[in-house]
Image 1 (cartoon, rainbow, N blue to C red):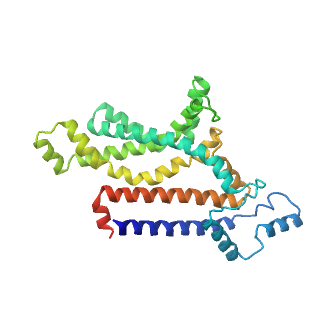
Image 2 (cartoon, rainbow, N blue to C red; image 1 turned 30 degrees about the vertical axis):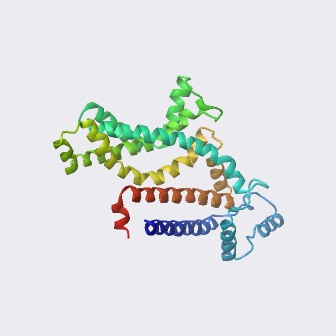
Image 3 (cartoon, rainbow, N blue to C red; image 1 turned 180 degrees about the horizontal axis):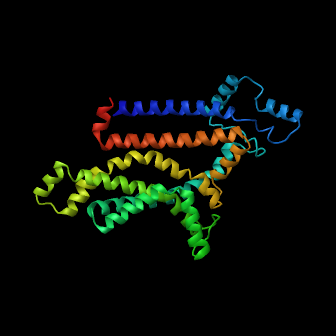
Length: 306
């Protein structure tokens, strides 16, 4: 097990290094720079480039950035004066994470229940309903779903606020919009996995022993069917907990999305790099944890990857 975990950790570190390197050089390929877009005089722009080290060779800039990154320093924002990227992430991530946790709990709990109910009632009306929900959820982008919820529940019926993040009632619509795709995906995967497991020999053996259908479902089917769901939880958890940039803009949530979108439009290299790397660290770490848990839950995985 220790060897399996060590391999996963090394792979995660190499993935992060590749991500940082690729994003660093891609950002530098963006047209213009933060200072020309700010309409500064040429002399001031040159001084700013010198201050941020842009007058040095690209490889020197890369190694300086990597050195700072190893110390946990994402650098200073080039748009927001005297504010570090670390500070902005620290101020905005709690809002994105709070929204993400609410959406994640809703998506996983409801998605698993819908998948189990659909599989247990295959071919019936409730199965058809669950399949329709899964198709709609995976077909409609979250920002379209968010606008739909805003119009009906906020504007037309006046049941919930349409924007801001000033209380628990403000979190309901964005959490629903953010959770819908994950809910539909989990439901679809769980249904397919349940239907596959029910054909296995150990299920037939359990029935031949006279076990009740409820016990077979809870103790044997769900336990084995949930494994494929675990494989998608890594990227799902990371993407949901860090919020959706467009969705946060629609609901005026003061999360990471607002700053990320603005930093791209004004070529704020430090902000783009910092938030991309932060998201990458979150994604790789979530995948690593899920990978390890998958190996613990199913010994065949770690044996097959030795």
